[in-house]
Length: 83
Image (tube, rainbow, N blue to C red; front, side):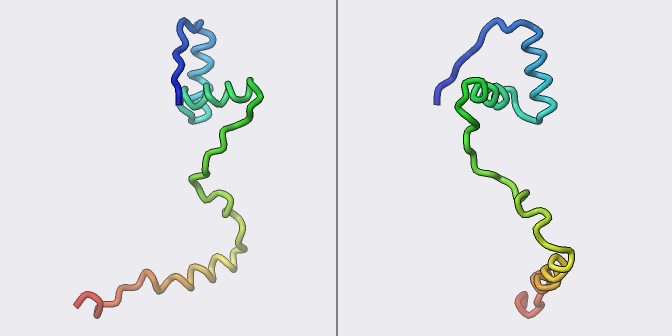
């Protein structure tokens, strides 16, 4: 990986970058890389997802309740194991 430093940004550009970073929840560095990739037409860098959002809303309420019931045993403590 290489680093690039950009000097003498005008205040309008600097404020806009800072505002976009704040509203998107991205660091300025990540935001600028994302904007550069888009402007250059090379697409977004494919990073592995770190969340489980693709699983939200997949199960019905009944399936969720059935799952909760099935894993309930894992929350129980077997006192004999601690003797």
